[in-house]
Image (cartoon, rainbow, N blue to C red):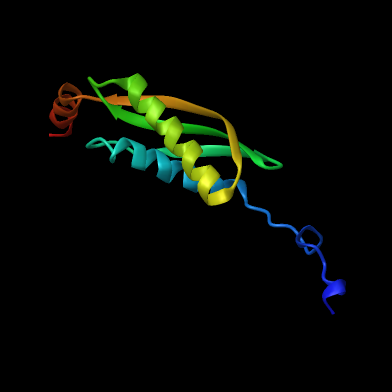
Length: 115
């Protein structure tokens, strides 16, 4: 009975947890940065989902000296692209927080303290 079919919207709903979107955002940030600086922590994300949109905060550690603005822009673009593609949500806001800079000098100083 083709006339008795229920429309897709009437069959149920799909809910994607904030933590799932956060994992996707963190992985997208790793992709954008081509890895983690030596001795650094991988990117992490916090996401707030409302309806079909996600607001994302990403924490990253970057090499110094480098073009910090370009790297943050790449993270924003990749996070938006991945979340839209994989989850189907709009991403009106991606805040990138640079939490630590890693340089050769800081690595050498850290090794000196460890000995």
